[in-house]
Length: 64
Image (cartoon, rainbow, N blue to C red; front, side):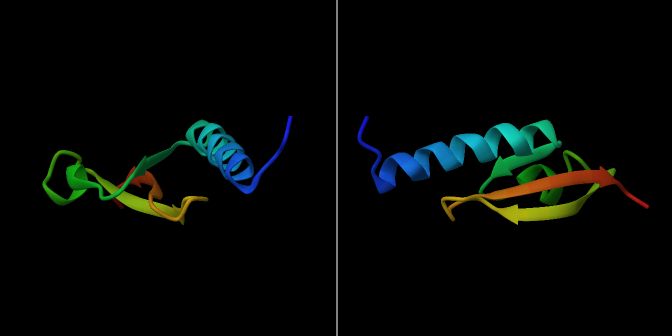
């Protein structure tokens, strides 16, 4: 199998999705549920930029 930069990027994105989902993160461009009130009892605890640089992973926690 020939491994190109595109293959490495795709594998990194899949690995990241598997690991961060297991840790409780959510992948999205923006979190409208927090801004618009669907999840008003939660706040963003941690945020990470995805490996492809186009999305943000956020971890939500209870409001203090």
